[in-house]
Length: 333
Image 1 (cartoon, rainbow, N blue to C red):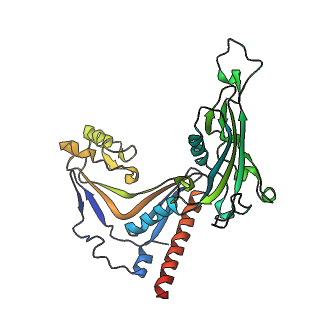
Image 2 (cartoon, rainbow, N blue to C red; image 1 turned 30 degrees about the horizontal axis):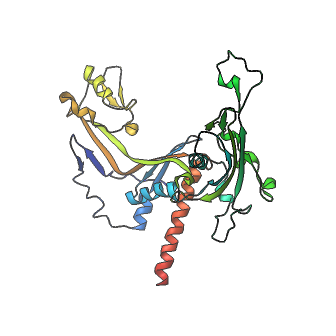
Image 3 (spheres, rainbow, N blue to C red; image 1 turned 180 degrees about the horizontal axis):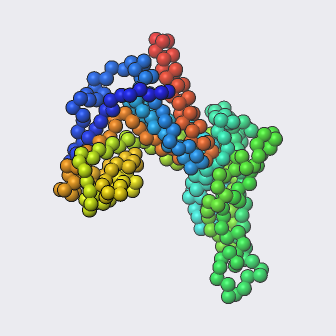
């Protein structure tokens, strides 16, 4: 949606306080209008890759921005290990600690392809709502290991248990629908435990679909945060040593220095707004720091099962369903 030229509502960051723009009366006097909301709303994607998603959400209330953040954390489902059946554990890790570590292993399975378990579901589950894995590892001493060797990899076999040791056990027709790489752990090199000769692990693992509001292991994001867009304005010309001092007061890349050794605002976006510049009397009046009140910079990092942009779209769908449910309840009264 194309955005129109608008007056940006600012929050000024002074040395000891945050001050609101005298011409901006804040949210208290804002009357909500769906037409005005549509005109102000603007989304700009800055970065979208395998590592994460960064986008700008412009022209919305803080409650809406925070709703998207919380929905991505708590209401977008994912698959995670829920039950751990320990048949043998002779390692030094206690059963409950081992089970907790297994539950936090990120799975690649797409939660949209599975159903939630219900109260009527059996403990074994079905192929529509359950994934099952096994972990069988036994440590032994290598026969060719010499007495003078000190590297544990040369002395012991299977002395490190990784997430790659998990073996998928298809239920029903799952083997015809999914591949092992599509449902197994996202990373094969997550260290679970270290063993010594005689130690053995024999586990059966059951993964189900769940929500982050029930347990953090079901959250599809590693991080989902937002912050207000910084705005930096130079009130006067700053040159020479003061220009370099000003540059060091901000995050790298925020303040640039031209060939005349004059400071200029290069990119205020990634400034942390530390207000470090107020420590120096000669620079105290040179800069105005502010943040745009309705311009949110979102950063979303996926655990790996869903892409970051898909997680945000799923959060939008969840919000729509919640709004529809509320409207239906109001109309039913």
